[in-house]
Image 1 (cartoon, helix red, strand yellow):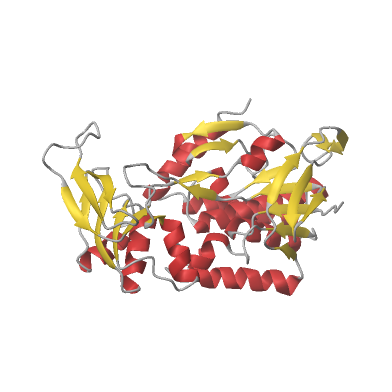
Image 2 (image 1 turned 60 degrees about the horizontal axis):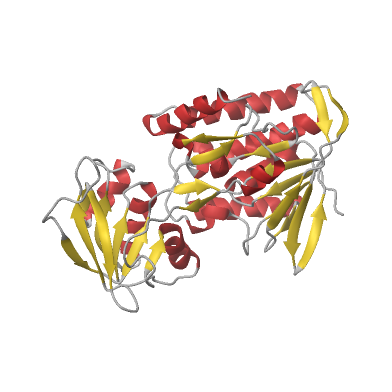
Length: 377
């Protein structure tokens, strides 16, 4: 049985920043991740970040991932890759009183981790679930044909492994992911036949939409896919206009020849560990579905269990990093107590996070977090 100070489940942007923030104040984190290397979504992001210089504006995502992983190695922070967390087993008995939070400090539950074919039981003093999100899927006739991908899978194929998913693509969804992946496909020499969107307006940033528009890619709003065609693989798709009730408009069907259909239709938080731990869960549509209630320092309803990143609500990687930093600082406060230096760092990080969410594209997240705050039982 391994007993780390602070176990971080997920080595993406939130998890890595939490580990670094906690180590700044003397904690010894252990990061576990199911992938071959840490970085999460950062390792496949070739576009530059927006925002302020403090949030690495102008830096490409994969460079940020390399930077964070390098700092982890420099500090000697232990990281287990190819090591998924496969279960959480609560203890539920109080150990001692935590004066900082004015409540009992609970004994940590046991996290089961599969590593090198063996099951390891970890019993940390505090846990962070930074497990990210999974891609949504839509079903239609032919959606099970080879050639139908999620946008994240296409990004991984191209940007991590250097493999083209096909020669011609129909993109479903005009959010930031759909627009960014469309542009990356064009950069790789793949023809993007069209981007279709069910809503009346493009969902992503104008800067991303403008790039693909200048390349001659049509963005068709108020459209949906009716079916994928092909016998053993995708050879095309049938799309149509939709009305205000999201029903196909008669005689508006179009046939598009393509060998790949890419789905960029949103993400859902990966909350299994939080459910197993018994955290208070709430359905908040603005955040992507079921998420765990958490306080200002990202601690859930179960003392000592923290959450950060897309598992708390679907946002940008820069937001995930700041949430992770807050969670790491929250773990320090929970385990080591308050200090002036710690509080200054907490206030600064919270201020930067609020600044990132202050603009119009942060409205959905702001509304979701406000709803979640009101859910505390």
